[in-house]
Image 1 (cartoon, rainbow, N blue to C red):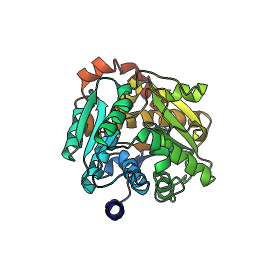
Image 2 (tube, one colour; image 1 turned 180 degrees about the vertical axis):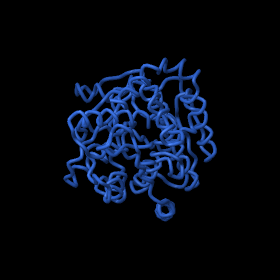
Image 3 (cartoon, rainbow, N blue to C red; image 1 turned 30 degrees about the vertical axis):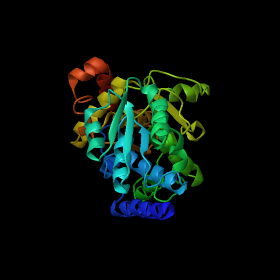
Image 4 (cartoon, rainbow, N blue to C red; image 1 turned 120 degrees about the vertical axis):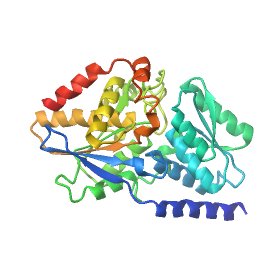
Length: 348
């Protein structure tokens, strides 16, 4: 009976995938960079509105094929928001209970979306408490802890199968510079950077991978030092950066890393809103700042080419936080120096 249910569950997820088209690749016109083409892979168009839709689908398929989930299993995940929204969506698709363990300061809009899909939110006071509390709940309820931070890099087929890297290179085929000089992205679990980095090497492309990391995250200092025991207070840019080194982060497939100030993430997010005519999330600001830094380096070296980065989710989820000036002033600080630095880079 469990095997029959698992077969139907996998078929339901695959059918949902077939109903969803691929995400768009948006070309940006950025003044001052005539020889460099910028592209945003718009992951906000997934059914649950973010890059994490891909990860959630892969995690469910991985758990089902490993025999970790049956029709009575409660799904538990530690997440600051977007992964939990996507996992709640798939839990509802399969008729399973879902509990998201998250910091109390998570954006209200994400909490509402989790509850919209029938999920429950279980709050902790500090970001580093989500792991132990998720394991405790899974044991208490005899459920399954998805553990995106461990399984993200292995649940996705990095060789192809329409993963995000495969999609990017196929969509770039007819562009002026079809093989990107750089792909730029931030890391939450590290799973997407692992997928992209492995795919680049598997296909023998000359593309290099830059991972941008926000303030107070351990990924960047880990990349420099190799010390996997580092800890911190965690990032203020929701959805990316971590207070500990996650098992899914694979530094050996990353060509370069850049630490991005929180103010720079917000300044670039607001600039992108004017450029696109729509709101994007703060992690997209982090990504785009990194893309502009690499483009500026290329411009100074007299090089042309293309740079691809990710639009992770919509800014509509952050109206009460990152798009609220009072909240930003209290939680991030004065972003005006970063806005001036951004304008100067664009004018150079």
